[in-house]
Structures are given as C-alpha cells and as structure tokens.
Image (tube, rainbow, N blue to C red):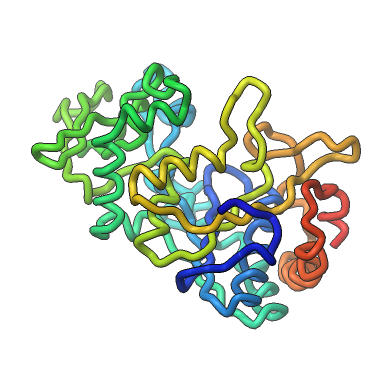
Length: 315
C-alpha cells in the first residue's frame, strides 16, 4: 500500500525503514524523510532502520575516476573520502548527519542507528532476492517500459580485483550464481571479473528496497520525489520500487510518502537536479533535528503533498 496518511498504516513487521544515498552533499529532503521515519516509528512503536545505501550503482559516476573510458567506474562505497578522516565517502556522509540524528533522538523517544547496505549484501535473503530479480530480467525491464536493458546489462554489478566495475552492470549466470563482466580498465591485469551473487557488489538505487521483506520491514518511508512520474515517464519511482520488490521477494511493505519539497512557486526541488538546499545551509543540525521532529508531529496529520522549502528551512 502507498500512502501519505498515517491513519492508513496497518503494519505487519518490526521496523520502519528509510535510506539515503551518499553520492553527494545531502539535500534537506534527506533530513525530512529521516525525520518522518523517526516520528512514524515512534508512533507505531517500531524500530527505525536507517540505511546508508553505500552500494549504489549508477553509470553517471564513472567520470569521477576514468573520464577517458565511460565503461569503467567505482562504486560509492569504494570511493575515497576527500577530507582524509574517513575510509570512504559513505562514512563521511554518515558523520555529517550525526548531530541531526542526536537532535531527533532527544525529541523522539527512539534510538537511531545507521546501517550500511554493504554490510548486509552477503545475507541470504538479500542475495536470494537479487538472484530472483536477475533471473527475471524481462519482467524487470517491463517496469521501465522496456528501456532499461537498452542502456544497461543489469541493475547489479560486482567489483573486479582491480577495484573497478562496469558502468553497464554485470551479466548473471544462474548455473553458477555468479555476476560476470569483462573489465575495461586498461590497467587491470585480470581482464575479467566473476564473483558470487553474495559477494561485493553495487545495486541500482531503485533496487535497494528488495532488502526490506527479509528484514521484517513494515513501513518504508520515501521522499516526496517518489510520488509522481516525470512528464516523459509513465511510471512513478514508487510504483517501480513496488513492482521490482514484488518480482524479487513476492511481497512489499507499506510505503509512506513524505511531502514533496517545492520552491515558492510550487516547483519541485530535488538533489538529483541540483536544485534546493543542502544540509550545509543549516547552522545547527542538532537543534534542527529536535525542531524538525516537533514540526513533523504537526505535518504528519495534514497529509501535505507539497512543503515549501523555506518553511522546511525555517524550522
């Protein structure tokens, strides 16, 4: 079930899940989604499953590493941290929001712990779900109107021994349960990568939620940008997630959609388009976490479809 009304939720499970992608500076919308998840978990008496989706796979990031070869890329969890204080970029992004999470905890009677998707990639339920998905690529492609496989081999890729992946994804062998691709890194001494589905890998971001059913997630909270399809698209992100998870797991949790963030003219803002404010525009993240949770207590009963960015920043 998809809803933005708390009254519609009749959860079966132990957790409320929400994820964030560490690809770039975190958008204020990330904080809003996390805040909604915390308030919902508190109201329903459930645990909060806050997941850093550090295995995110997307071909557009290859330019950060091999601009001369668009087939070669690194996954987010393999990328180094620019500040030199963390082992990778994902840990850096988690560290950035710790004050915000502390503020949330002080306002909501809930302990917030962050998990990393890379830490569960070897769990059987998750590997099995990805195997189911990769064995049903025709059905998966239908979710994207037949367009996904024109651009990519699959929504999952493994990592070569040289540290790089293929920007088009990896092929899947059901007989050996392996992900395979020919490595295009000119400095690679192996030339070919093969690894079990439970090994180190990256997943396309709309595939991340296939982890939910096996983790007994009752409600998954998504940002407002999942609500509607763009003009050139026929299916919204949330519908795609629902269909993908059904293919992989045979079931989906309830999906709660937080408000969409808009400018003063009502135009949607998003990190992916480079619009809107980031967490760097917030002076005190800990205080902000407390105040945001307080405001969400009011907003969550209003079933708002749009939330002014300025109202969000003025919390």
